[in-house]
Length: 504
Ligand SMILES: Cc1cc2nc3c(=O)[nH]c(=O)nc-3n(C[C@H](O)[C@H](O)[C@H](O)COP(=O)(O)OP(=O)(O)OC[C@H]3O[C@@H](n4cnc5c(N)ncnc54)[C@H](O)[C@@H]3O)c2cc1C
Image 1 (cartoon, rainbow, N blue to C red):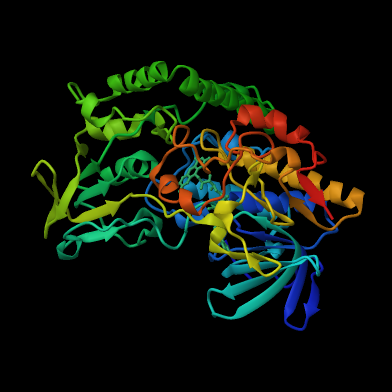
Image 2 (cartoon, rainbow, N blue to C red):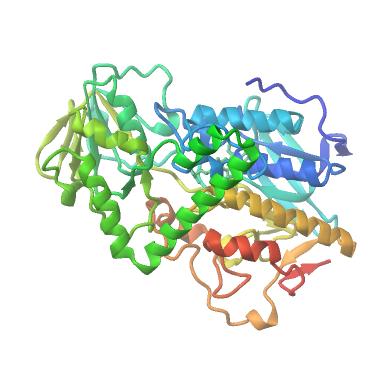
């Protein structure tokens, strides 16, 4: 895809010789930012907007992660947008997701709104001017740009795209082989015929291993502790049936969305109501796919409840096939030290390696590391409370998108877009230009809880960063991370006039 700079952006106004004004400024051109842009164009064609992204192309996560085999672990009927039918198999390669996003951009004439290599570094709200002043650095030239905007729509995702999480291991400097992180995969990395160690369990490791195992001499998955896996078919049989009947793609998309939503609602419900039964179901469904006598207890029995961390999807059980074929193996142990030729683990065993892949996850990034101020005061996010996981107390005219953990991210991006559009309509109807989530008198004394309850969801990147994140309350509309089943009822009906949003 070409990434030419757009000549014009829907009628931007200049707010001074070097300042560009847009009605809405979207940060991030990933799945969420493209969703926001689509809704703005559909619902408010008269409003000007730009989408700024620090990277040099669209896709966010799918542009950053281009390691061998990269794919979704959600089905694309729900990971795809409500408004754009998915025509492929349920589980899609990263390149297929990028192609789908390209179609959305082309079909909706969004390219001219998107500017790449623009990193937003600061956003300052001025109540006097009723707008945000946004500072942007051109990643390619270092040039500083200024924008003003009436509304900031933060679609920056949840992790630092430039700096992955790389724990420091002892001895890593003396290792003679190559160390790579999946978030920064070198295009020319040659692993054919090599011994590869992948550090990590979970989605990235389990995606990479079968893909690399085809060419590598051997791949060892080195995990400190096991994760849950689920091995669905790549294609849903219902999709095959409907397509054979020549049903319109829009119908197939909607029917499959409902089927997957139902399935994942049931899994989410079961994880709360019958965690032991779900645990047993997941473990037992793996057993026939693993080699005879495989130590499931040691390598595949997590210490946490299903869904307290994401369940890794292994379509058609491809990870297990690599284990059966002897192309891959698993070591569950701690790393003692890197050596010149590999990694020595707690048991004293040394795993020889030419290439080490550190599938160790992310550094969480709160609001794209943008420095926020409101009327000259820095926004102290850990002291703030979320409004429905969409806005933040005391921060005017700013919405953010955070998707689901137990369902496809995009299901929530679509719901948030609807709500933000409804908020714009409400403001228009009231003739106001400012909206600020504010705790009401009846919220005084409300118990504040951490961003994520570790009982509910506790992956490493969340636990490492709780202290920099905002809080949630114990009642609506101050809660977040609700299940999709609840939110698809709640959000479309959410009362925007219950006093928790102050319009000025
Ligand atoms: C390998 C992988 C597979 C995944 N698979 C799934 C899946 O199958 N299903 C699922 O639901 N979720 C999945 N996820 C989670 C995934 O991140 C979300 O699904 C989704 O892609 C998030 O989209 P987003 O647009 O909100 O954020 P991102 O994809 O993170 O994109 C955010 C964009 O904002 C830009 N940005 C951030 N800060 C700034 C700034 N200050 N200035 C300018 N630009 C900025 C970034 O450069 C980036 O391009 C996966 C994650 C990974 C890493």
